[in-house]
Amino acid sequence: MKKLIIAFLITMLGVTILQAAAFEKEAKSRTAKVHMSSDSPLTVGSNTLTLDITQAGSAAKDVKVNVKAFMPAMPGMPAMESKADAKDLGAGKYEVTVNLSMGGTWQLHIFITPTQGKRSRVKTSLNF
Figure 1 (cartoon, rainbow, N blue to C red):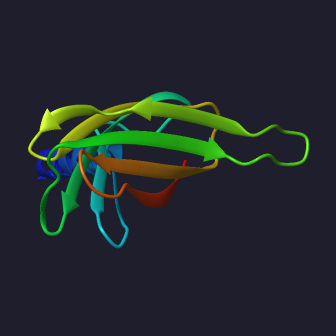
Figure 2: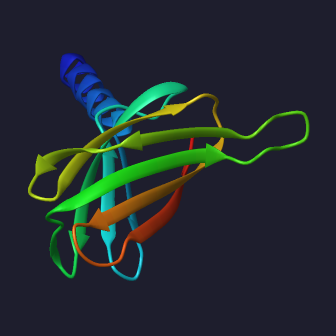
């Protein structure tokens, strides 16, 4: 019985660690919805995000995606910024790597530019 309890606790601990390992967040604007995810938690330094973008209920096609992560200036600290172009993975999925140079709350703007039509911006924040 003792071995069964220990095995159960180890399994529960493993499941808890696996669930805590990933990052997911959803953001939307009037014209687009973005589901962000990462295989690992956000950290200081380079972070690779997968963006699943939908527009008008279907996967975004023929769009260029740029991401800007920034932290405004605060007393004793200058403003920080990271800009990157996302790589098209197909089927409305994009991958981008942003550099978050310190922990805290970062503003994230995702710019979606179609080949024809108006550019849209999805705004959200990241906190770690």
